[in-house]
Length: 475
Ligand SMILES: Nc1ncnc2c1ncn2[C@@H]1O[C@H](COP(=O)(O)OP(=O)(O)OP(=O)(O)O)[C@@H](O)[C@H]1O
Ligand SMILES: [Mg+2]
Image 1 (cartoon, protein in one colour):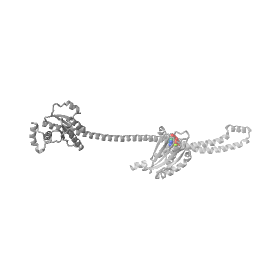
Image 2: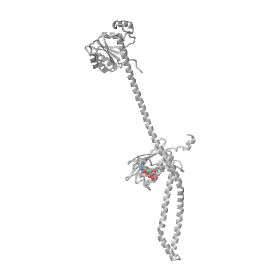
Image 3: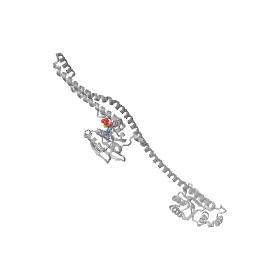
Image 4: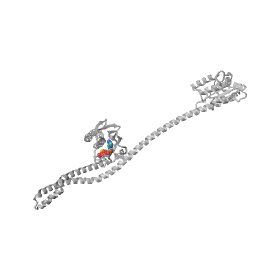
């Protein structure tokens, strides 16, 4: 939007007659316009008649007075578009001095310098003023049309410069606004890209775990059968061995009464050679150890099955998470108590619908892992709980060794362990991951090397609809 054109003109001249002449040309009283034509004709000769286009003309008689008017007009936000300035105005400033001061106050002011003297050194004038494009020269005697045209075109020029400056400001504002919008959009985009990368990473991780889960389920199934009959055969074998030992005892007792003494000697020699007494002691030990081994293998197979969720015979129930955590902490107390003190920071949480004993298993894995992460000094394990919207969370945080980034990527893989043989199978976390997935929850980990690790399990309060049910109801 352009402002109404500025037609305000200041005339600075020490001669009253000049002011009157200018007023007739630039600001004639409307009623006098006919009279004006006659006067103009007398004054300026047969110049073309100015039209009724009227300027607002103000007068000053000395340079200082002119400057004061310019300053006042600026203050009132009604600046002059142009000024006519006389060259000689004793006793005050001359025209050049005046113009210098005017431009200091308002650099936009268009100026016409008026002179009657041919001896004026224009080179000197121009070198004293930083002229550029705002100064024109008008020589006396004045021509009405010259004065009028100068006024018309310089006020129009002022207005155009003003409009251009305003447009530029608006443009700059628009650019600034647009830049702001763009940079906000860019920030949002960056955030989304980061979020997507994160989700993609999670997806890759869960797909990897799902395929490992299938493999594990297959392996578990294959191992399950042979383990089953080895285990039951062991029971039978134990019985048979007891009977064989009974038989051997009987033979041993009858050794002395053999009909032929050389038979007795041979039997005794054989017994010594095979160290029968030692065998009788060692065989039950070996049997027991093997049986324990098989029990352990069966447990691993069961864990694998749980991880891959092949058979879930458990019941869903509403359970109190704090009770579950407390009883689990009791069970693992012997493993934990020399390694760390356990601090409970329980929040207010409602009962949740879950497979309670499996959730306990998750807690156990996390707490035992935390205890294993401790060094020589006794550390601290903090168990926290809380609610967030429709979910509850439990956190097991330790101030142990922490997990290096490379390891962190793999901790949920089955059989991934950094522990020595016999100390860890690497199934604890993968199993926990499977259980939490089954509850449609999340398990997150944050770890700082040398400072500790925190695992956070987030679970829905209510058991979510099963996939099939979701499909069936079309939700
Ligand atoms: N709190 C922890 N602090 C440091 N490292 C941990 C922590 N929890 C898990 N880890 C790392 O993750 C690995 C995998 O843990 P996971 O519980 O699956 O197996 P494990 O403890 O090695 O064996 P298992 O639990 O089967 O006895 C661990 O070997 C260990 O390197
Ligand atoms: Mg573990």
